[in-house]
Length: 333
Image 1 (tube, rainbow, N blue to C red):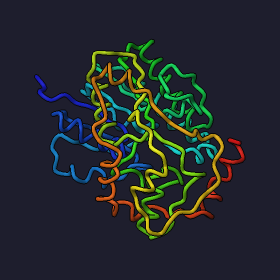
Image 2 (cartoon, rainbow, N blue to C red):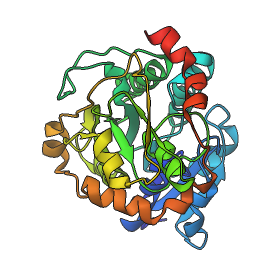
Image 3 (cartoon, helix red, strand yellow):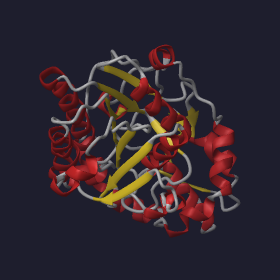
Image 4 (cartoon, one colour):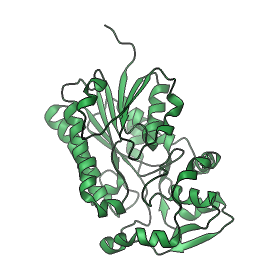
């Protein structure tokens, strides 16, 4: 029987980037199937799709895919976001990170061996470069500095091994600093946006690490989702692309846009953190005809219009952050 709609499987589809990628594929006329164990994802990220006939969701874990085999049948494409993030928790519990990000990826790949997948796109991390020279190209040396970074890189290597042995068509995108609506509101101390937005809502000072002059290559999440869509549809295979805006912004610039009347508090600069993350995006721009569409100012504006989303986020202060990052200073100094 002829199928009119192409089917994409998106792991981690209830997560921050995953849910926006679900939206993108639906907009492009795909049937979207997604699973997520909801350890980092949130059902409210996909609640707007409850009446969408072309979207199916299943709660499931990468390490237990047996029940999902029927769910995955007939899939044409796979975009793989599912995994665990954050630096400090990976130092505390490295086994969990290798189990989810590396072994979990292997389980997903193994479950696809009998399916005729047109493209598998892996969500990799720029953390694999460590404290890299900038602008950072795909040819920069690999230097993971903590278990999260290594586990994500191992997942990427598994994907390319499946390409080599099983001929699975694979592309990988190394994400720099994604931001936007639906970013995570639970879990460990980490991404600056979640920390600042809760502090702003609570009328508390923003906790700035160091002098705030450190820069990050922030890219709005819909631009990220568009890149993953293009990576799935290209004829190019076995490619690695760095993904950022190519225009790093300082933490101080973010603080200025947030305009917090409660002021700021400064924290010690942390070892192992780069002063600048800066993606060289020439390759992805050339290969996929992709470029960022949302400016940093407009992206922050979109977040502020939806700031109530972060009401349930944990509130971090100087004392709590110092306690949480103790291992950071111990192991990454």
